[in-house]
Length: 406
Image 1 (cartoon, rainbow, N blue to C red):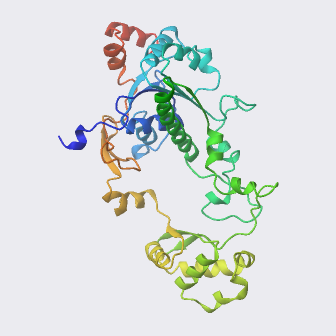
Image 2 (tube, rainbow, N blue to C red):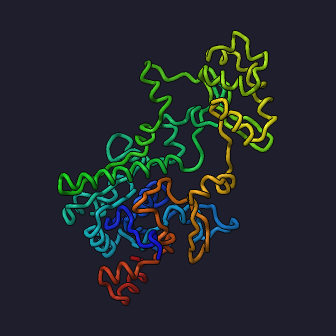
Image 3 (cartoon, rainbow, N blue to C red):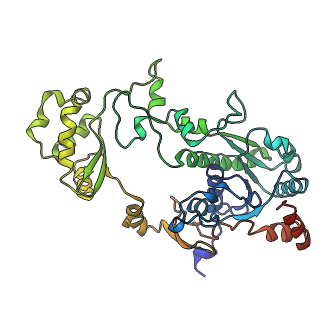
């Protein structure tokens, strides 16, 4: 065996129970699992995590065991099925919670209490338990019972601004959020950080604690432009004054240019060969360039269209211009930088087969990331957890499966 194959993870010995689906909660669990914690994922019998029904799927053929979203979010986890609304299911849940360090759940506020599985009840069984609840607006406040999707979260968190748009919009154009599940991943990361803080806190106070995560507050705390500018005045930040740049068309794709400051404009002028038109007095300041954007922008776009993405990137880099090529997923995967750093790893899954996965964005010298297991099949570890650990017989497991408990 190589050294990496025998090295334990940084969180080896930490045990977590994940009662979540889709993205935020499972991503929190994934981050802990990637650091070496043992994470047991609980899914609903038959249906499983909703992410199993979301793509992308190999060859665009839907299959509950082949969702790229589910496979990525649940590597390095054990998986069981359990209906926690049944009497037997609640008993199993309590027995599992009694033996773990962390419980991550994303049920609507009040649901865990209705099941008798709230923090007060479970901490009485396990005073060391750290319980994390992830909801759209947190456990308190007038919006605590509102459901919310990723789109809504961005619009109510100050993130639907020009900072996240590839092409700066004109005044009056409706704001748009970033694509995918960016806010959900942010909330999962924030939750994992809170878990690590609570684990450290346990050394100081000698017991666990309850962690209330609001996805909306997570996104507000991460907004670095318009929300911070709001403190400068009583009114909302203005979206007028489009700076030069944005999304530029190249010979083989697009590049993103963001350069509102004067020294960045000076670098762009040098990169363009200092054409005569750039010396106009009106273009010397940020405000002046914004006022004359309709004159400047077409010329910058025409200049950029003469280059490939790579050529334009290196020319801009040479002149200290903040410009980057827009990479497709295929571009990112084939780029020599992540390939040489080993950012992608091949994992063999019994149903999906061998696929390349993103790993982690850090490198720990003594406790490196390892692909210990592929994402679990639905109920794959029922026997291992329920029989070998909790002591149920195979006959009892079969009866529970027949009754829909597992």
